[in-house]
Amino acid sequence: MGEVEVVFGFWALVLVVAMAFVSSGQQALTYVESRQYTEPLFVFVVMVVAASRPVLEAVGRLLAALARLAPVRTPLALAWLGLAVVPIMGSLITEPAAMTLAALMLAPQIFRKGMPEWLKYAALGVLFVNVSIGGTLTAYAAPPTTWQWDSAFMATTFGWRACLAVLISSTVVTFLLRSHLRDADAGSARGHAKPVPWVVSAIHLAFLAGVVAFAHHPVVFIELFLFFLGYTQAYEHYQNPLILKQGLLVGFFLAGLVVLGGMLQWWLQPIVSTLEPTALFFGALALTAITDNAALTYLGSLIACMSDHAKYMLVAGSVAGGGLTVIANAPNPAGAALLRRGFNDDSIGTAGLLLGTIPPTVMAALLFLL
Image 1 (cartoon, rainbow, N blue to C red):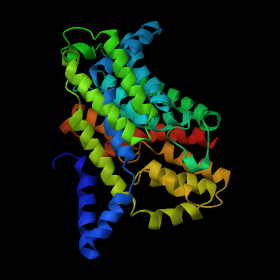
Image 2: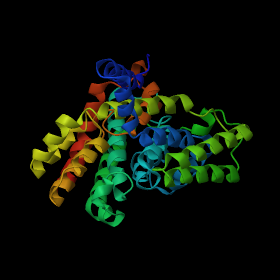
Image 3: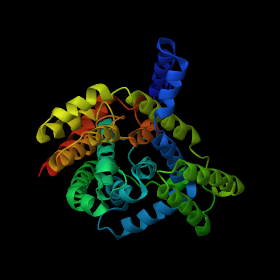
Image 4: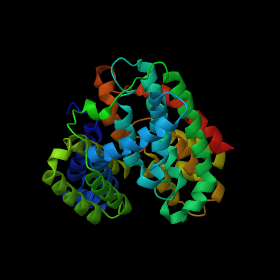
């Protein structure tokens, strides 16, 4: 009960028990079963697979090779790649996977004891915002499927603006971090005795690709995950302990948010439906901080006869505000769970996160409003 991720699952339980007493147990059960839990299940699975040692080593080697080509110090280049390039990869490997990889890659460099606290919050704010807007280059995550926006539309309408915002914010915060960055080897920090064979890394990457490809089909990606667990047990000398605890806590957090989110439609949808496009942008940007940007865009997709301009403003505002709080975007709890040990008191403060997120949020909002 001391874990912050428990809060929404706990209050979801209170809600369901209250529904059972006020109406009936059958009605409470019917409501719970009407909710869609694909996203919590997927985030749990993709966190565990993406954080496995063979995947981390493969991505780490790739980033290290790119960093050596950069005309700056390697630690500086690695920090920039983790804050800019990995979040943009979320358009291909999904935002939760990008958040997991970026968090674990950046933790030894930035989110550690000794780094000034304000710089950690600044970097965390940039990471959260970049993951939120970095998923807009393709049609995987950001738009509601009912609008039938394809990847070409997303890239030309949202993607280039998102990339520009990601590059600017990442460059600024990396410049601020420059004197505090040091060489950090994630592999040695974890006590790896020997490198992982490329065949094992390739198999892990294939598992990750399969999970991502079937992200909307829980029966398939759960079965792949069970095979993955068996494989890691068979070749455990190439593994680190899987992050099952962190993944389960994040899944529990998101599942609780799904249960509670079904009770928000009565007041959220009328607000979304009555706002003019510009007001809708700022309304979505603010509301996503206390709901979830996917839930907000889903409610917007239920509104009939919504103009194309209003649709753009709703999605743009939702993704721009996706870093303001831990609950604003589904991958945020994953990043918070993996990085909070590097902050004072082993926790991420709401005020500190908000202050760190405001500059990259303003940058994203300005570019989306162009």
